[in-house]
Every structure is written in structure tokens, then in C-alpha cells.
Image (cartoon, rainbow, N blue to C red; front, top):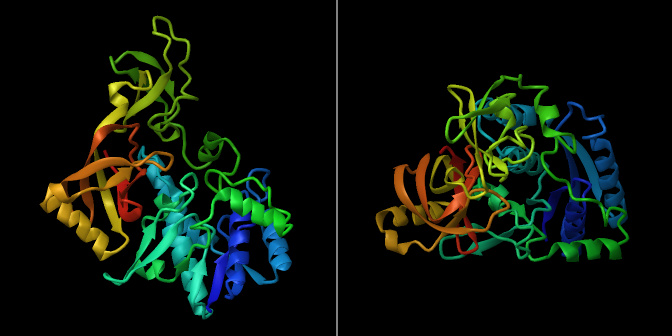
Amino acid sequence: MAYVIIGMSGGVDSSVSAWLLKQQGHTVHGVFMKNWEDDDNSEYCSSRQDWLDALSVADKIGIDIDAVNFSAKYKDKVFSHFLSEYEAGSTPNPDIFCNSEIKFKAFLDYAMNLGADYIATGHYAKLAKDEINNIINLKKAQDNTKDQSYFLHRLQQHQLQKSLFPLGDICKTQVREIAKQLDLHNALKKDSTGICFIGERPFREFLNKYVANQYGKILTDKNQIVGEHIGLAFYTIGQRKGIGIGGLKNSNGEPWFVAKKDVKNNILYVVQGHDHAWLLEHNVKTQDMSYTSEWAKNIIVDNIKNQNVWNGSAKTRYRQADAACFISQNLNLDNNLHVKFNDAQWAVTPGQSLVLYKNDICLGGGIINN
């Protein structure tokens, strides 16, 4: 059995994960990661209650737990990237970089320095040993509705080989049932949504503290001025609510969607109709590619050399079904790929991640820069 240090957030997933590891015979130690300090005492984002919840669970299941502050590293490695991308007109996914830079880097280093054999988290994903290639593959969780391999796609072998995901073969309903049977007080605790440092507060309210308004024109696909935006950073491709142009005269009554951003001229383009051509895209370009293993990277290489060998898929956002595709062009395998989808993808968004799969194995992905 191993010495496992598990990240405990105070939520039901990491709580049950800790219990499962102990049941398997491992020596388990909990760590509560504090990753944000600004506004931490506000009604929207307070870590104190989460810490108390984690402390209560640790006491209940009989393990030790410590609190570790990674706020400075989070601000430097994750939040600074988050802000710079928004200021450039993109829509980043900080949870992905939090995993690669904090939970599976800063936390991993911390745990290894304490002599841990592995770290563990409450993520819904699987790890499987490939004996032939001598690697650990990152795979989708059994519960498709909760699978989080998308958020973990930047993890590499040195991280995957030292990680455990106890919930990979368990459905969320089972997790809550186990928590009830253990009489954990957080068995019915609401899942955290969105970005931890934003909490439940309105996103614009939060972002406006760090990014100044830069007013500009809102134009249609016919270059008609239909309003004024408050700054491109405050809008994302596919956005429907909060544009502020509903009920325009001479419109066809269909809802408006954000379709494009002209950063150079500070123009926001909107279109009517969910399936407008500007919202549908077959071709997706990526940068800053990351692969889970050399084997995974070689699969992409083989696809580029021979289009007939590919039977993979990809997704351009988390809440999206995998879609068949192929790698149509390689400008620089370590940085840029050009992926072509068989069916048009809706609201492809610069700053988000395109993640590649071969069946249920996550190969890696890159940042969309269409």
C-alpha cells in the first residue's frame, strides 16, 4: 500500500475519494489548498467554510489534514494568464491551467517533498497503465456526465504517473450515496461551479475590478450598428444573454448571439439565430499544444502522414459531445495544429481548449486561436 496525499476541497467528491483510498489500505493524508485570497471573505467566495467542511470530513473518516496556501503561485501562474487573455479578447479556461500549474505541479511538488508515493484528487477521470508502451493513459471517467478529462488534458507523464483518481469508475449518484451512508455532513453539498475566485458573483462585476471598460460599437453581419458594448473582454463567442440589444425594430425576432470580435478596431459582431453561419466552424486552429505522452503525440504524427489511420475525435468546449475530426495541417506539432471537423462545431471560442481523443483515451490538446 502507498502513502497518498489527497487534495480535499470540502466538497463531496474529494471527501469520498479520501475514504475510498483509506478503504483500499493506503495511508491517507489530506491537504486543503487555499488558492485565492482577494475577496476571500466576501459572500461570493469564502474558503473558510470549505476548510471547515474538509476538516470535519477528515475527522469523520479518521485522517490527518493540513491547509497549504498556494495563492501567490496561483496569482502568478493562473490568474495573470487569465487576465491577459481576457484583455486580448480571448476567453481562457483557468481551471485547466490551475490543474497543470497548481494541483499537479505546486501541490505535487509539495506532496513529494513530504515523501508521498502519490497525490489524489476528486476528479472524474481514469488512469490506465499501457504495458506495451510503458505509459499511463488518461481516460474518460465511467460517468460521462461528470467526466473531467477535458480539464486534465495538459497533464504529462511525470504528473500522471504520480496521480490517483479514485472516482474514475464511480457515478456521481454513487458518490453521494456513499457520503450519506458515511453520514458526512457535506453529502448533499452543492457542487462548485465556475471559477473558484469568482464564486457566485456576476462575472462582469468581478472582471470589472481588474479590466477597464473600453466602449465600442456592436455591429451585425451586415455592418449595421445595433448598440454599444462595454469592452470586448466582457463578451464571449456564443453568448446570448447580457448583450443589451434585444427587441430591435425590423429584426426577425430570433435571439442575438455574439459571433466575432474585431480586437484591433474594438468592434463586437452579433448575429441572429443559433445556427447562423458565423457561429458554425469546420476548421479549428490551435496553439500551445500539450500531449499526455510521446505515444499520444505519435498518433497525431501518424494522422498527419496518413489521413486514413485516424479514428479519433475532439471537443472544443467542456459541455460538448466528442465530434469526429482529422488533423488537416501541422504547422508546428509542438505548438500549432489545424483540425478539421466532419460536422461544423458551434461557437468555437479563441482561448478555450480543443482536446483530442482516441476512443476514451485523452491524447492532449491546445488553445484555440481561430
